[in-house]
Length: 230
Image (cartoon, rainbow, N blue to C red; front, side, top):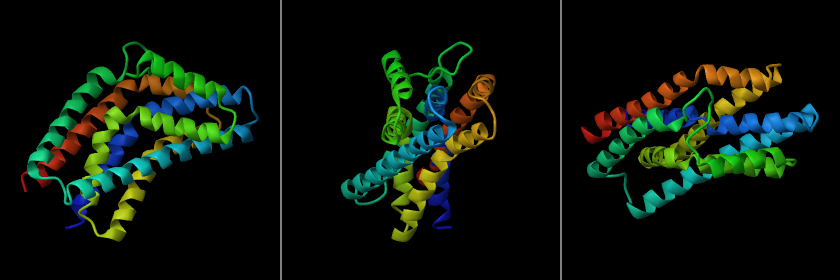
């Protein structure tokens, strides 16, 4: 049981992270721009680099948060600090429900218009693996207002694990966060068009919003039950 709770917290945080939609929206933009300019093989390489970029930044940010928490606090967060984290998770659940998606029949997100236009422009101009890799890192960075607290939760739990299991937990978190882009890549590679995938995302917009919202609440409840009240 000593490791079940920390791994469960890391798993839940990673699932909530994976439910957010910026990386998928950016990936569709990249597909839409690339398929009109390049052969499918070239597009495949660009998409692979994009996904690696997402995973790389997630791995680096989580590792950095672990280092900072371990160095500054020298131990997992205290109950008072965890209570604040739980409150932030509840607040983010509310923000996701009301503000994460813009209104209308689209999957436009909360991003400022200037940032959204910049990502759209970068996707259209991406022609090399390096640029696709950078775009993947950029989308992960832009999602930080919603994911930073998830990194903190995961890092705090990971610090309670033995060294070898800490590495395993970081890898697990990283892999889970890139599963949705990998699934989208597989679906499009098997013949689905970008338009049909986007229509499916719009149709299930409420479901994804509910999934993320409930995910933040469940993670907060789990922390409150097993960390604050223990």
